[in-house]
Image 1: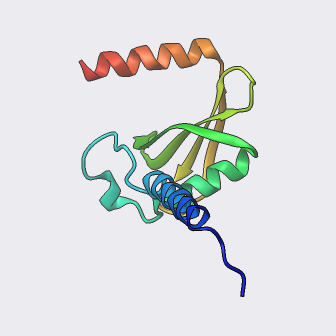
Image 2: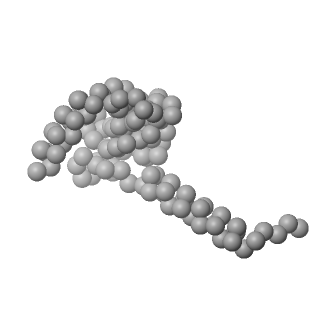
Image 3: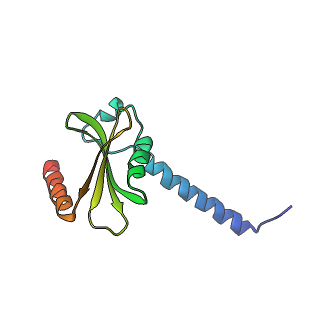
Length: 122
């Protein structure tokens, strides 16, 4: 039987705990544009994330939101792809999990959208 020093076992457990904490936060609740939208969604956020990331391989989600856009309930993900400028906005239908739109937003459009959101919050 193989034995490991106690410090290796302790640090392995600590790393596993941090990874679990990080993953559970990412799989948790998603920001809602307005209260009550999550109750209408048929697809959970984790499933929507997987669908969005499948469209942007090697992408990293920067921002996510559940919103009503053009009359549809969608998960909206801003995904950064490597060092490329701008982001890819991927919208996933919250009722059936299909990707309904993929749109590139250059840095200028991102900044304009951020200003618009900030103005709406005030």
